[in-house]
Image 1 (cartoon, one colour):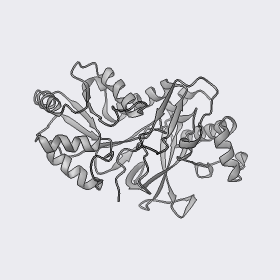
Image 2 (image 1 turned 90 degrees about the vertical axis):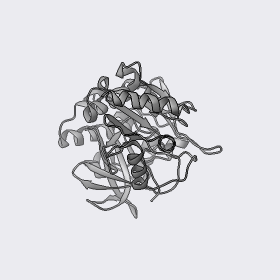
Image 3 (image 1 turned 135 degrees about the horizontal axis):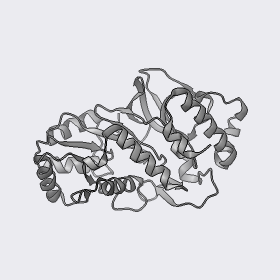
Image 4 (image 1 turned 180 degrees about the vertical axis):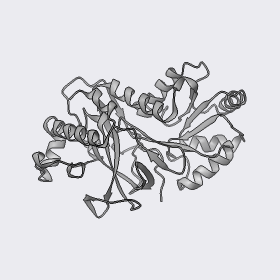
Length: 325
């Protein structure tokens, strides 16, 4: 199959068909994934539904090279972590798949990136190498084609002045920021924004105490003077993202799917409004592993909508919106 086909999926049957093709491709070409499937005594020939596909625990990205290709690695994305922790490594052999994924997803949910000035408040991520979030933000900044777009680290006064000026003249703005830095910004300044999308990417990074999502969003919405706080859900191990326009309810692009596994039986799945572990199908990961069992908790809230609840533990996944329960 051609990797580009994943971005034109338009039906449930097509998603299932391509997912099964990707499973067979990765079972054949990814030695780590094949060993994992074999340990589960999976008969690849009998895998004929999404529920029968084995999902690789996300921790494997910390200990093994997860590759379904022998092509040269173009970029290795790494997760953040404190001293002494193993970090995840996502080896990418085709960066164009990542770029197509985040560009098409953004356009689907938010429209033309050139309509926005992109302001990225991403300390912690900017202070290290290998962040997939910084890579995405850099491309969105460049694609916006606005001279005012850019990154911000600790220069909050400059960001405040630019944000107020842009919003005040009616310019659409995307302010994307790590949670602790957005809190720092609204503690020092009050805003009344009318043309700005405030998008948090989760993470206190040890700078602040963790808090539940509702509390975080209430503080940010009040501080920025907006009705809803948007969110992005992504991680080092994925090449696709889900987005929320508020209340922690996320939707995925057509080549990404979230399943909810039973926390007591990892091979069984739950129905609507039951909380369990999040399994992710990311078909953009065709050259690594598209079937990942995360350490996150969630529930299906409605058709194609997922509520992200939190984490099983305090691991260092680059997961947006992963608040403690």
